[in-house]
Length: 241
Image 1: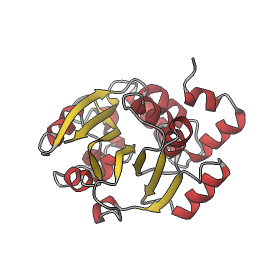
Image 2: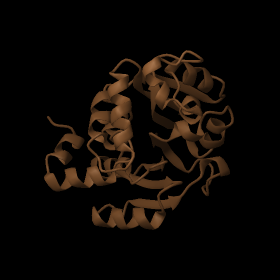
Image 3: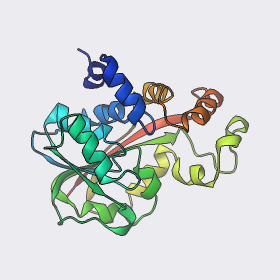
């Protein structure tokens, strides 16, 4: 049986929607793989943090019937609301402006799940961030993160072919699975249930390289240089206890 993402892409109109909407490796496909490791129930209240243009939100609403609060720093709530209206999910998708480093406007223990795709690495690389976010998740609820990563830490030994693409921001945000595991293990009152390399890495990147976003041209060159040797996608799931 085809996945939700494959079924979605079987329609040419949806394919165009995806190419217009993607902001990085196909967030719908990444979200679907990570969601398959979670017990998401209809009407679960989910915080989709760093939702971008809402592809992960679409997946969570359409496939699972969840109520999703979709927050992003770069995409305005109005833009996402209009997009959610156009795809018929506006009754269950609530857009809002979010800067995770400056706090969020929610009650403690409000959400069943904090879900974030291709965003957490931009703001979650400090010891303080995970504790500051887990307060919004119910005890027994989950935090699920999927982020681009590397198979091992480069340190000062950045491979020659990757050096043209490796600036300070990339070096700060693109880390190894072991690096992230060590960071999360410092947080109390969570149980890390899963940290793994995701299966969809190659396909999600390949679909992104067909998008219309202006940075795609540079990413095509980067992925040609990388050649499958260094990049992965990292999934981390923790239970709040």
